[in-house]
Amino acid sequence: MSVAKQLARKELIDMVPYQSARRLYSGGNEVKQKIWLNANEASGQGIYQLNSDCINRYPDFQPENLISAYSEYSKLARENILATRGADEGIELLIRTFCTAYQDNILICPPTYGMYSISAENHGAGIIKVPLTEDCQLDLDAMAQQVGKAKLVFLCSPGNPTGNLLSASSIKATLDMFSDSAVVVVDEAYIEFSPEQSVASWLAQYPQLVVLRTLSKAFALAGLRCGFTLANADIITMLSKVIAPYPIALPVAEIASSNLAASGVQQMNTRVQQSNFLRQQLADWLENQDWCTKVFASDANFILFQTSSTDEKHFIFNSLVAQDILIRDQSAQLNLTNCLRISIGSDDELLKLKQTITMAFANRKNTQNILQNEN
Ligand SMILES: *Cc1c(COP(=O)(O)O)cnc(C)c1O
Image 1 (tube, rainbow, N blue to C red):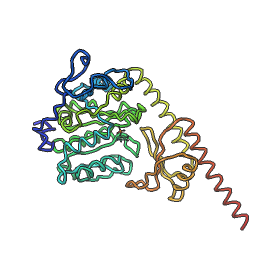
Image 2 (cartoon, rainbow, N blue to C red):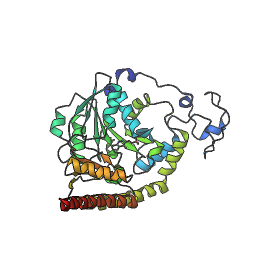
Image 3 (cartoon, rainbow, N blue to C red):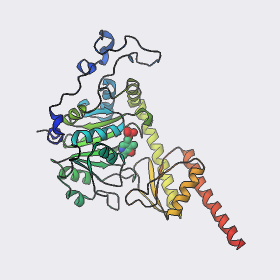
Image 4 (cartoon, helix red, strand yellow):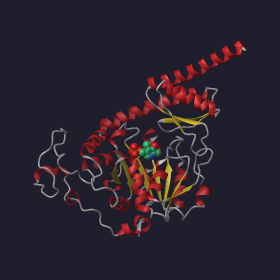
């Protein structure tokens, strides 16, 4: 039996997905050659102009141009790819597909991305937490204790908000450990910042592996809402029963496809190089600040660091807010006391951030000196 059939919610196994007009007869390149009277669409389009002249028609369930473009980019077959409204929808689909509400659990390794537990709670799935080790790697011994108790294991590599990659050997160990009891999801939202570390090429060896991708980070298209779930065909088929009948809007498919063409990928790579360079600069600067007690290693487009006290954390955060610079407080996360996260913006933005912090501390010191002299 396939992994998908073995682990999916029982009611999904024989379920036939909604047979939309477009699923029965996909459009593809033939949209204009047929007379479409099967979906209650209008015969002409409204006033909004688009490159494609078929916006009066429902889009394909999985737009052909988009799946081909991502297949080319990821070097995976089309049957291994499901396009979703962001990676977030992939997370939600996985939980809805594999977890029976009020019965099944997911396993997460905090500190980690927040949406795994939000989606689980929304669906009524339980959450088993196995914290990362002090060096932000998987605690394999503790995970081994949970084998058989979770349907889905969410790994995030590079991790958000920690920033570092998980070791390939620990991801392999997790896949082996949960081989016949759970789907192991590797969230690669930031993998373009260290592409050689992707585990997408492991799909052929591991039927239980799922990889999440997105155009929101390195591709700079967060507003588009487009992501991809990569998995073996039986898992993709099962997820296709749960996803909406027309998840990807026509303009989204068009914009995403053009960004995945050679010139788009080249632009993305240039952006990644620049971001990695600026990240190193910022890390070096943070290392030299006396209020900074730890800079977490990052393989992504952000840096997590720890401040020396809660007062210092608030001082830095609020000094930045006062200048309309927003960073993210991560101190509510497990083991991230007094930690802040900075996204790698432009050269100018990061320069302004450093100047603002430097100025704030200098002003504070001056004020303290004046008060001391007055006493
Ligand atoms: C940003 C992010 C996502 C969600 O990406 P979308 O495609 O915008 O939904 C998923 N996982 C992680 C780890 C992220 O940081």
